[in-house]
Length: 534
Image 1 (tube, rainbow, N blue to C red):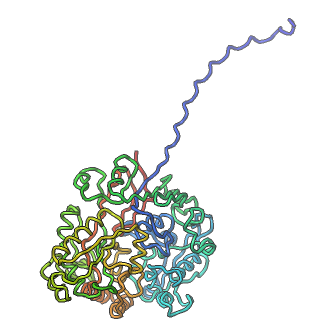
Image 2 (image 1 turned 180 degrees about the vertical axis):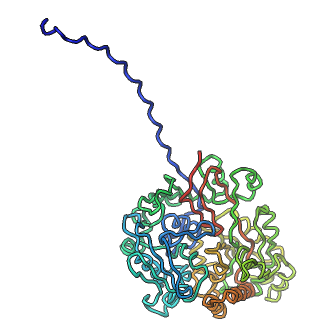
Image 3 (image 1 turned 135 degrees about the vertical axis):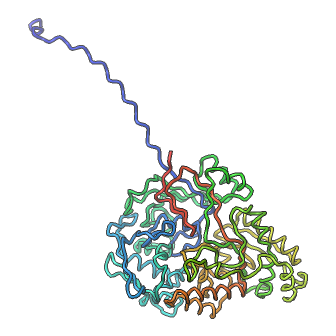
């Protein structure tokens, strides 16, 4: 045992233990929470009509182009050519474009989606947005029984050729609009009605994908790992909440639970205007009341004009909207669109069509219609979607009509989806509505009143009006096109199927640390490249 110890090196002193490295703090998720105000109705791009719906489709889908403010950027198409004097567009799709389920995005997906939107069976209220495409209107209105003549075809997997009825100066804006988005035909054909109901089957080609939908509460989106520009997305999660009460959403914002509000109540505007988070967005939009012209007593244009002139728009803008940027409207198309001379504004050139308040003329018109002093006038109802501002305005209009015309009006509010459904089915007499531009041309306001428009919820149909719009869309002479649109707007106001009340702004609170979001005057807010600074 001793021998065994000879030559054995003495044991080295034990090294002191290295101090443990502090654990790296877990990376905090970058989550952006935006309130969209209500439960969306349809999130199928072929069927979506409202802003709440478009907030979701804009992030889950990519059109051929995408708008950043008024700039048109390549999106699913990396480039395009314009041929044949502006009547043919050839789009070259990105070969790395993929759906959120990994399928390649092909030209066939666009062809499928556009023809599906036009198919009368789809009942797309926005199908008329595709009428610029050759043969689209004939298929949608049933003149052609098949889609064979619709001017969109896949030349190959990644080349889409579109033939228009006539040159359209703003067609590239249109291709950024949801009705023009592609659909994954394999997914949609597997469940045509139900594919949007579950995150697992809500397959898009956009920068984000849905992972959760708690109805009437929130939708959660995360980056689409297959998106062609995935590296540009810094957010870990985008949450859309559906809070309808202004007071609740402002409380949530001030408590740090929201980063962007959908709106701000009028009485809070003076207080929050001085904070760094006040962010009013000027919209190309009009708030209005629409009349169901198939229903007495508003089937009489004199009644419609009397009701219009008895609304004091200055009081609404001053007392309810606190002069936060809303402007009294005496025409349909808001300021902000170019006229034939691009240096001039379409609204300035068109002027006003009625006084923003003329109770004497209103009383005369009502008497001419057989209701002097309101005598014999049936009780009517104003329908509005549940919202504090709509309620206050409806109450004020109710009081104005009682005071100036001597008529009795009741009010009815409904949640968004029910309200839209009743508007579409003409289950109302007078209803509140709002319209924001879909693209930067006055036509976006003018053509929604053609007889075949799914957004014409008034029951009014006019061949003369339809012909004006058809001629405007087919002429290659822009001055003539603008002239025809002015004629159409005058006809619309002469018929008074709608009563414009004010031109919009969006009074919003946006956290000052939010960067990279795009707030378009079209009401389309794009957060996919947003970041939140510390």
